Image (cartoon, rainbow over all chains, first blue to last red; front, side, top):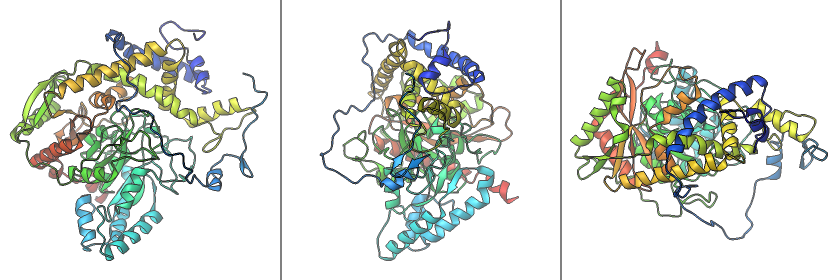
Length: 102
Length: 494
């Protein structure tokens, strides 16, 4: 369970951490109030008798859509790398990952 | 010339009465004249358009017939077209240039359409007014002080202003139908899975659907027939024969049963708006339809269901925007801080709100109470429609509860979400659904009548009867034609 749960609302700072958003304190306050109002609205769903109802993930049932295992052309590497915020030769250059705290 | 429908333009270009190159230049001239006031386009694609026009004109000279020959096409800027900056009206994509073309756009270009530009939207298609665009304001061509609707507001405004004869939008909970109603054009969302979404930047994958925006039902049918069908590049497209709709449009409604939804009683609406919809139902009857009462007991739960499912899927889909491979990056000391700073800087408020609510609904301890419960509610909503369609061939109801509203009128997010009351249930059920112009009403605080749309919806894969019914209604009433040129024409000419 999330820590620091606030009565009747979302612990926005905690959820923002899960969502990888560095919200400002002002945003935490603003979104907290707005999402609280939305939650009040969606709580109407608790009135629906759904105990014996199957969940719908999507409406057009399709399963195991596969194609033949044949190699097909993919995007040109140089075209893709040109979009990189930073690159080094044929690689994406990314910030340090090893050593990061969990 | 720019007020001609796509069907009329294609006929004239194929008959060599006018060239595709001339149609392209006419569209750009109209855009130059009007788009400063409307703001429909985020970018114009002159080079692509001229190259496409040259190809079309060469093909026509060789005697080939192209179903969309020379038709100026506007594309919502959440769809990829090779070589175009594709923004989703967000700062997080930066100046990302699409390296491939979406299947839906590609099929229209193959049919001879001329891509004139990419249109504004609510950021990542999240909104009902286009006000959530991080890049630009788009105005309603019927009243420049009002929103065009959203999220496909730019595409709809472009068609309404005569800047493009045809446009593509995407509809997740009403994003084609509500703006079409606000701007007096036809907006059509086909059955979920009917048109490939390859190259459509995802918002909510169990709901997103591409569809055409046009001046006539006939044009919507033409574009639909070209785009629909299985695509190996989108595993969610349905492998099922597409029934052609062009050539099967009706002129009357004899033998058609149209359902009127008890829960959507018109007495909740403003009297002038109510009178327009009462007249629309009377017109359906006058054209030969039998009106039958149907019930959708769970329809009132649509918004609550949608605002859990769509944000949940959005929070998952938008996790890919992390600043590593493309778009904006705000560089910090390590990768985690870089993710957080990039997403904080790159996403606007509405996108953040939806990511937060979706993350919350999917988080440990809340998943069953929110997300799974909403999925079960979705089952009940779809079952309600299935029962209703045992009694009728299509359902008629308002596309929106009011005409277009003024900028900043819906500052409270929940009040904006309520705009999709009439469109969301059909999206949750995956149904084909469209908005067709149905008359005019003066909004609260307004001085002149503004357009309204009649929403018609049909069972899964019943595009042919749906478009047929809409065509008969359109021909029988001619609401759009009575005032086809919106006041923007007079505003920029004066």
